[in-house]
Image (tube, rainbow, N blue to C red; front, side, top):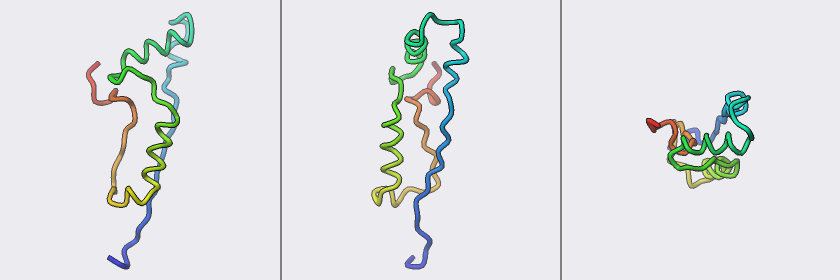
Length: 83
């Protein structure tokens, strides 16, 4: 294993939640649209850029040396929920 290639890489695709387009004309305010979105997330909160940054920092550290070939979804449980 001394000759094995080692390295961490992160491929991050940041995209809009579509909240702005979906909410156009549907809500009275951005805050109301966020509340609606929040109610459909199992953790009942909107994720922050810092939460994504924490994951990137972890994956960039030696603490993640045994992780490979993984896709990590950060969505508060939305993708694994039937809400």
